[in-house]
Image (tube, rainbow, N blue to C red; front, side):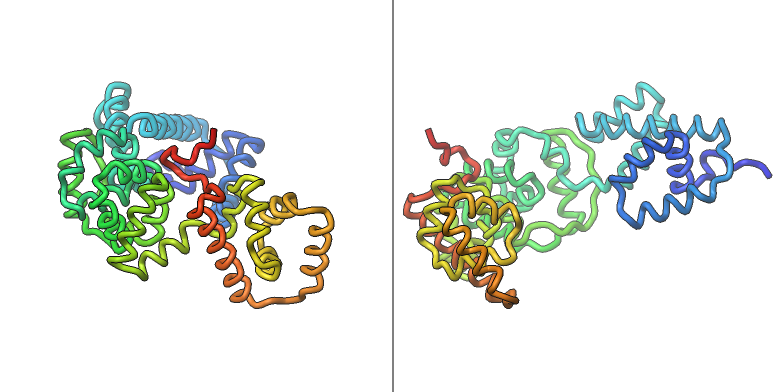
Amino acid sequence: MARKTNEELTGKQKAAILLISLGPDVASSVYKHLSEEDIEKLTLQISSVRTVDTKAKDEILEEFHQIALAQDFISQGGISYAKTVLEKALGEDQAASIINRLTSSLQVRPFDFARKADPGQILNFIQGEHPQTISLILSYLDPAQAGQILSELPPEMQADIARRIALMDSTSPEIISEVEQILERKLSATVTQDYTQTGGVEAVVEVLNGVDRSTERTILDALEIQDPDLAEEIKKRMFVFEDIVTLDNRSIQRVIRDVENEDLLLGLKVASEEVKDIVFKNMSARMVETFKDEMEYMGPVRLKDVEEAQSRIVAVIRRLEDAGEIVIARGGGDDIIV
């Protein structure tokens, strides 16, 4: 029976031959990064391989090497850069084949090039654009990038932009393409288009977590007037109970003093070990012993009660921060203590 050519082999067959060729030690390391479903599929495929043709093995190893190089080039300078380098090394046809395979599997997000650009460059370009355009671009950037840019926009625009990001749902590829083409002339990049879910409350929370405290206050104060429910929803998510681990010891000790013991008991009931450890670390030995005993004898509690207790603790933390009693680390540099 004639062997299949490299082009006729499926992706799973190639992956199985690749792992067999790399040996059990490397294959087991690769397995650690795969999902259970992928492991099952690969293992089934590997078990069906009887012999590995030397020529097929060499071709698959070379193909893997080329794809790995292409991915590295993409991470260095984007798809356009990778395409240019590969064309010089392998020729236009082979380079196009590799890039097409990679972009379909990587599903490169719109505005990928902008995430590699300097925030100052992006700011210079977008500050004269319509607020909806600015919101669309910021919603695709890394939160730290978007937060830095949002901080530099005029104060009267900040709350409007934050609100638009929070209320954004999906954007058509035509609109994304139009905005990208304008950006492409400035920053030069090639991206793929697709309907992409972006924006929403979580997106604006991530952005606001990257701005300085002054900008955050300005935006939230304005939102409380424009859309009180949205402002409250954002504030609830700005700092969650598990974020207690980011506070310094002095702040945690202050929080322990100000919250109700019953709330702290309930809040710690289902908290991670990391949270429990850092809270107990800031209690006296006697208080730790008392808390652990009471938590042990507390018995089952309703999740709703736990969540409500944690919300009350978070409210105390935010009140203490507003009063300047504690500091919550965030972007923008205004929380550096010297």
